[in-house]
Image (cartoon, rainbow, N blue to C red; front, side, top):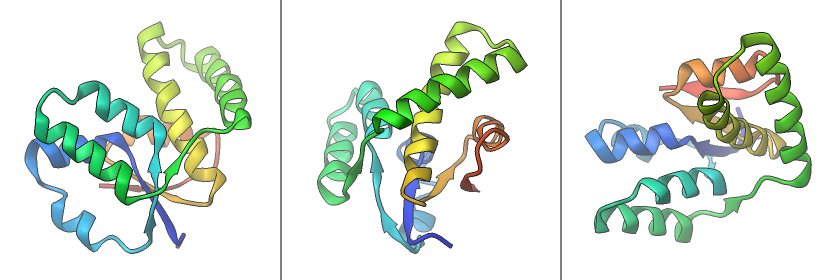
Length: 135
């Protein structure tokens, strides 16, 4: 099992809305790394002071992984292939692009990616080998 862990946006949204992952997050083994993409998605949706503070605390407390040039280029190539195979609408492709960037960035450091977004990340794992854990 990887020593690095990246939580997908879906885990933090579930945590903020329901608190249902609090125990599991606290018990997660490994060095937590944040995805810049996840922090951006969380910031975009943070409308309450407590939500903004949560995002700021994440950014302060754990190193941030930023997609590399190669991650960006590979995400575009993979998204094109997925689009040919699946024919998703533009909105779905945009959302999937963010997930691809999160996955490829985590993959580039050998991190285990924890998500509750089974459909998208299992789809991505069909195109690139990932260490994913579904909650």
